Image (cartoon, rainbow, N blue to C red; front, top):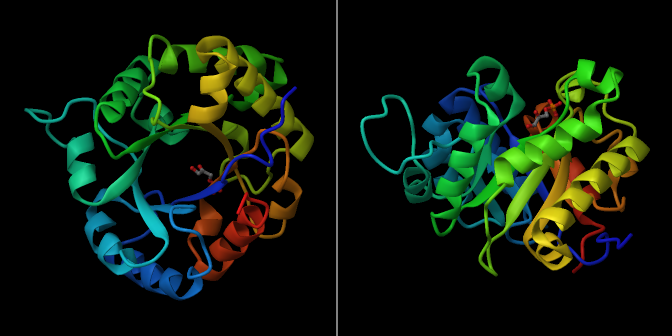
Length: 264
Ligand code: 13P
């Protein structure tokens, strides 16, 4: 199978989840400012909570780091109490939006019909790249249903979508059992899962769109200790980092290791 490891610019995305206050987010952004000068513009993304996006953006605006939101709603405006639209996160300075994170699927009961609506709304908002999360839970893995689950999640979220030539979609493969557990997937298993995702995208969009318009990244207990095992693997175009992104030095170690292998 075709390898993308030498032909794509990799991306490393920090998901700060609901772990930092506004003050802590500002402090971390200031720390990152000092560590991140080496990165190429747009190769590192941080996703603060909604309340912190504007302040973090102000701090990082002249750095290579860009901002993403951790979620987004599927309508642009209206009576949707508590929701934030794609055009609103764009206005706040976001260039990426995470959609369908497993924690939202678990606690907010988001399903792939909702994720599909969110994806469509983001693709209709010029300037934001969607990061669509997929991944099996422990039971699905143990009972050998992972491949089916991944294909199904891709079909449900991306079915019927057509992309313009310049539109990018990032698929984040985050096995639920690996998130926050301190136990990352074995690299060979990640390569296998990413191959399933790649083949499904080939099937749904054709190999050219699959190669040009999609990145497939891994998330789940990545740290500076193990990141070297995930560098230069087939079809792994980057990382989505949770816990290890909450410390600037640790996160930059992860990003540097991953991005060192990117096409210059
Ligand atoms: P951890 O890196 O803390 O396992 O979190 C991964 C994640 O959920 C990123 O979205």
